[in-house]
Image (cartoon, rainbow, N blue to C red):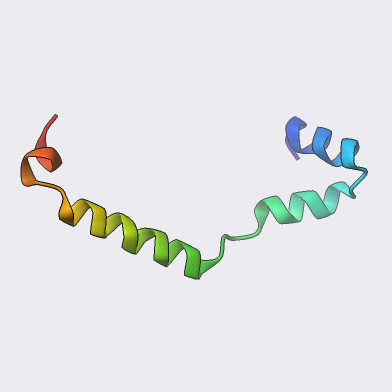
Length: 54
């Protein structure tokens, strides 16, 4: 567990194993799909010149 997570667990008196497990848990797949879909919609709505500008 990183130092920051250990400090968090110590400060809130939470079992370090629980904090570590929560940090490693995969994000909700539905949230990832929704976020990805929104990002695709925003990019699709952008003018081509903005998408290809460097």
